[in-house]
Image (cartoon, rainbow, N blue to C red):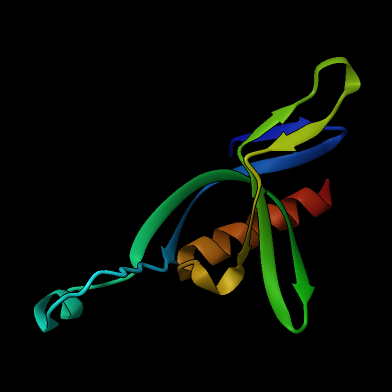
Length: 103
């Protein structure tokens, strides 16, 4: 499994599938309306962590980083409610997070 070590912590790379909101502010007929669906998005990123807030689980990811001269940083960061991911991606996220915690 692809990973990167940053400041002595190993983070695992995953390809994740999730549903995104689709919006349209134009006037449309019923046919266009009935064809409107959420977008299935694929994100490729490293799993930073999982956390809980107000009874909901969230996952944080990053896709770029720096490690030169012991200056550690994360870029292309995102935070998602874990329920937007399909079941397979949720399982992959939890597995990657467990491996990161294991060290």
